[in-house]
Amino acid sequence: MRAFTHCDLVTGKVGIAMPKILLTGFEPWDHWSHNPSGDIAMALNGEMIGGCDIVSAILPVVHGEDIAIVKPLIAAHKPLAVVSLGLHGSASVLHIERVAVNLKMVGGADHPVVDGGPDAYFATLPTRQMVMAIEDVAHVPAKLTYSAGTFLCNHIMYGVLHHVFVSGLDVKSGFIHLPPTPDMVLGTGKTSMALADMQRGVVAALQVIAEQLNVSAI
Image (tube, rainbow, N blue to C red):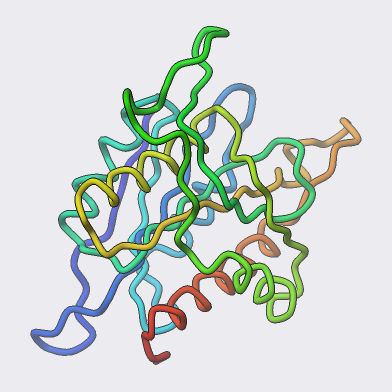
């Protein structure tokens, strides 16, 4: 079942729209009963972090439909940054992704995310500072990683970066991979992280993003 939501325009003062960060997560997929990326995105929807209002959306796990939802949200809300979240089924820490590649695996075959697009894009978020904030402020383990995979996580990261680039928008963008929660891997021996810890880490990352964008904390 597809889920999608976003918050309406929020004003901090009469007639003055607050700057925004667009935060996306994915709906549950495959055998997972829920998706922590969508859980956290919606938990933070409408919150103010670092002087920015958080506008959230849950995306379908369908190639093409993900970016089709995000593009009009960027146009409508004009966010300073787009931060995408996704589930990494075997992660034990938060992965701050540096690179998105023009490659998706569909039906066991390689396809480009965008025909004729660049081979790769680097995240334009302050990735190193995000890792430091997650670890030093939120006390949650995190690391820089250099492959967002070849599924929907890489797809949305590349898609947003490409859209921002070709549209000439001054919007920073990047991706955070999240581990499964303990209930998702119960009895499997796989690593996990409590949802509250992940959310605290994401908040720390959003805070430093807002600070890097010169938005004064409120």
